[in-house]
Image 1 (cartoon, helix red, strand yellow):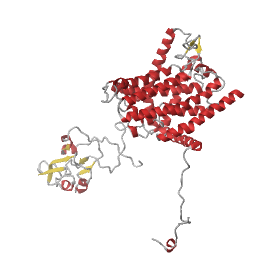
Image 2 (image 1 turned 180 degrees about the horizontal axis):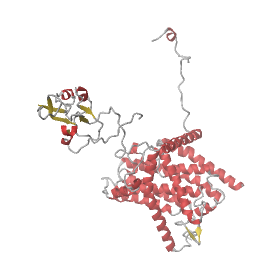
Image 3 (image 1 turned 90 degrees about the vertical axis):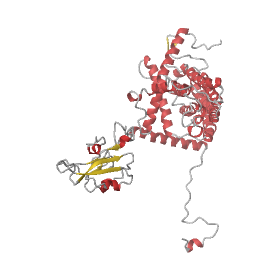
Image 4 (image 1 turned 45 degrees about the vertical axis):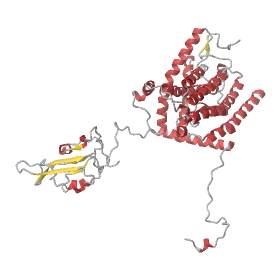
Length: 187
Length: 331
């Protein structure tokens, strides 16, 4: 965007008010340089000593754990109604449909009225989440019309076999170990 | 007389006993220093450092030594077998030999608490310091690897550049004490530690000492970013461990020499039996400075190392020696 003022400027371009001189450091070397280096060295030593006095910021992981936020998306949980103890999941497979990683498998079955498993007409006879595929996006939680599946706070899921990472309905319904501390409101 | 006269009045068994005590004490301290350095370095970087093996990670050197001893003693295809093995041995030999002249206490009843008090004094330290570079040079050259070779050449160049400044820095203290004997030099600091009149000498000695011990910011012979590990590249197992141990010994000795020449050696408040403790405290304090500087300064460039050594340190050291000489003569 050249305006008239800059267009009229001729070569050689003389220093103008809008020209900013480049800031250059002092010339290196020599006794003066050594003196400057000595001062800067002392400044550096002060900086590192200050870090030492502040103390380590490391979290000793297996013993200490970082608290997670309430909205942290960890391992899934399946829920029951607190009063009746019936499963909230009705086996509608909407979570499986929403899952971008295709890691949820639901096989629905009709409820026996004498011995109900879930509150709805049907229930999930098989409900498996393959956690080695899961990307913890939380779409299943959003898709669920009954809040039957939510993302928990557990993130320590390492195991020795891939097969052990396929969590069945019983495992997802069980009270999670809650090995993860939760952040308090002021954190 | 072929051998120096000062310390050799002692009986042989006393000399052997002293050698064993000093050797055992320093070799008990050196491995602890490795873990202490790593812990201090960690603190400087706002982390803990090793704390898993044993209480506070203090058994870490034992685990390290066990690992190093258990490793294979391999040799590269192009290595010169004898010299390749001789390199670490030479380095550790010269490191241990220099320990002998550090005075840990006053002469009592004709027995001094030092390995030997040679009449050439500090020249002995420089002789063995020079010899230790032969170890690096031979080890690096005999490895038959270009990185080792480059590291070895760098260590040779660094030795030439910094040993002169180091010696000239000590010259001021020697002139003020009027003796080369380390015990005499400590006695000359009855009134005031030489760090006050010889402050510039102390600074020059410490800076040159960093270069001499191959420590940051002058650890160019083993600059891992450019030449892998320099002369250590082809070494493994306990041979590499010898290089590391020798580096700590060298740091220990340089700190000891600095403590003797500038910080009053074993002098300190308290009864006489505390003398070795005071010496150790001063040495460890100076070693903390080594660790502190390592945590602070980045490695200098090679030309910076050379120009700093020749254009700054050497003139300053010469000036210091000259001014001291004039003042000692006049006063």
